[in-house]
Image (cartoon, rainbow, N blue to C red; front, side, top):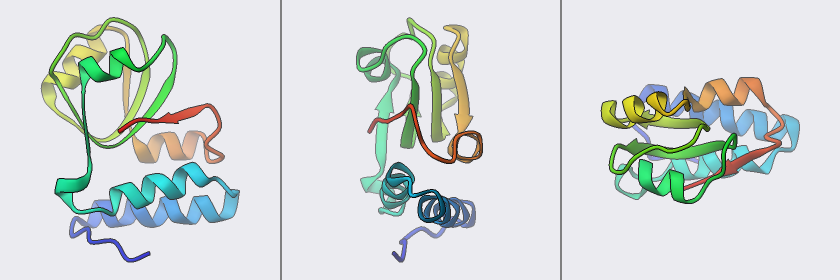
Length: 119
């Protein structure tokens, strides 16, 4: 799949996601690569309130886009996203959440088991 991404970091991430999806037969990484390859306007934007409403304590979540700071964080999660706004990161870390990059969660869990896609 040819992505429309201009950002070199994003292009590298998409290529790594597709490579891992093929090697490990992990469809979640193929889907994340597809969503990140969309135009910037079409990528996921998720607020902290939406994260809290749609998750349970201790879940691992991947957001193929940006996490914004609207709302309050109430429980701990592991959240991997392409970008976090400074306010979102501050609120989430204060509530005990781990904010990591998608590449970090990909290397930690190449099979994609136990991870939910949100966005």
